[in-house]
Length: 169
Image 1: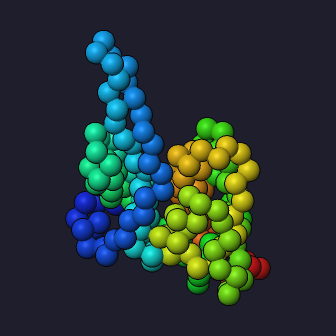
Image 2: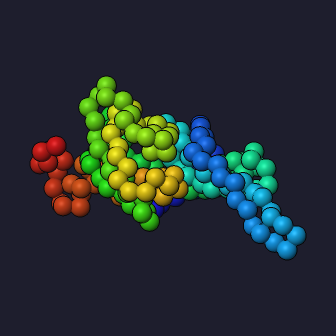
């Protein structure tokens, strides 16, 4: 994945969304240390999206750390109008996601974490299906992998040494 430079990220008008907050505990000699783990998606709604995780003793601090981490892991995703260029699978661990383009006016048909990442990436018409684990971290990572592997018509034409007009999309 090609991440954006920090100077490029600062220029974007970003919105963040908390996807999951977990309470985690570490057992030590004196008892348990309770901390909070947060998973945050950051995007500008116009082709840039990132995910990040953070952990702290307080929830707001964990969210802040996750948001900063997400800004460090921003990628550019291809937009074709209001949808994705083609159907694609993504998987990470046991999390599997199928993303499908949709006609204009369909809306975002996706559940939970996938909906958050699609909306913040700027997709207005997309269908998604979670095929594996329902763990939000694996689903989000699978979705990011799918976004990173998507190619536009121009990229495919260049790879094949053809013009865009020769393709029958």
